[in-house]
Length: 219
Image (cartoon, rainbow, N blue to C red):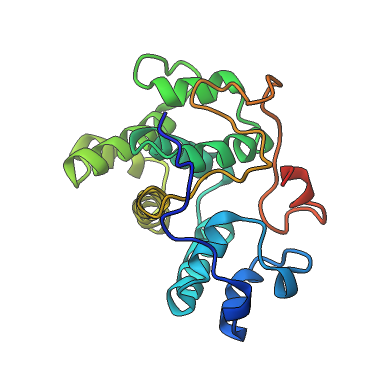
């Protein structure tokens, strides 16, 4: 697992912050973020470029909270993309989100190891996992995968799925290219599902999902 240990693009110096910078940093509603900045590395990096940072945040919020797929489908996609494009940052964050969505550690390991292990997943979910690999490796979906997905997903869901996969590939590219590390105080979860502390991975919450969502992350 390749984990960045320093930023290629650093947090903007506080003396350079404008209202536009602060709007990016406080987009997700973290306490005191207008005054102190975000505690989340990728948000602070994106605050270097407020026009892009705000577009990225609105786009990302749609795929976090506004899309037509269910939470289990979302987390299956993000975890599989994180494996395929080697994104330790997305993997670390979304393991906790997936556990909160009711996905077990055994299932998370099967998503990682697909297709070697897939017995926990129904036909639709196997097709969703397959879709991630096909789009990344072939730039398209096979007719078989499309037909399988179309049995249970409506047109809006099919469109959201394709864009969801692309969004997390794009985000993972940015994290890697910008050298964005997992937050220093986090109990980092590796692809082997072991944490830095040795504790079993546990639930984490999406922005705003609970009042203390940022504290529960440990950084």
